[in-house]
Structures are given as structure tokens and as C-alpha cells.
Length: 110
View 1 (cartoon, rainbow, N blue to C red):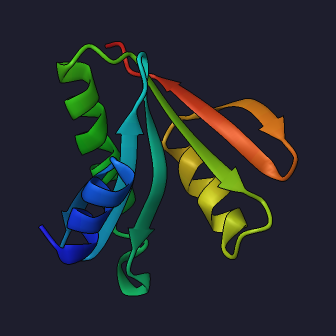
View 2: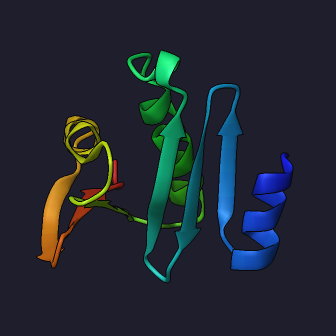
């Protein structure tokens, strides 16, 4: 685990899943897992690494009885259009919109 992941866990109480070319920051609520960030190095962005990391998090969540995955995209952020395409392509659906942030949800029940 990297120093960044240690920092996220210690300082913010969140989890960080890392692979060679990316990472995901997430945390659990009572009934869902919220993916805060997924970052994939530019050269690898079309390689499905983001989906593989989300799958890992979903499997971990299912194993502890979590049934929903939640995420969001700030439409003002750099790369927002690309993020929207990825999150919709992963099968998440719009939950609600608050200001410039679009929230998404995905049922994890199989």
C-alpha cells in the first residue's frame, strides 16, 4: 500500500484500492459503498482498469452485505464528460442532481 493510501485511510477513514496504473478511493455507509474517485493514468484509460477497480469494490461490498454502489460526477471538474461516459457505461443510473454534481447509483444484488 502506498503512502497516499495510508494517508487516505488514516486521515480520512476511507479505503484506497490501488493497481499498477490507477487507484480508487471509496467508503461505506450503512447500506452502500460510495466511490469518491477513480483515477487511471492517461495511457491506460481505455483499458477497462476503472471498471475492474469498480468490480473489485463491488465484490468487496457484496461480501459484507452492501447492496448499492453510489458515485458522483462534478460537471465543473476537468474531464467531466469522460467521467460521465465511464460511469454510465459501467451501468450506473442517475439518482439525483444537486447543483453541479450528478449522483449515480447501481444495484449490487446479483
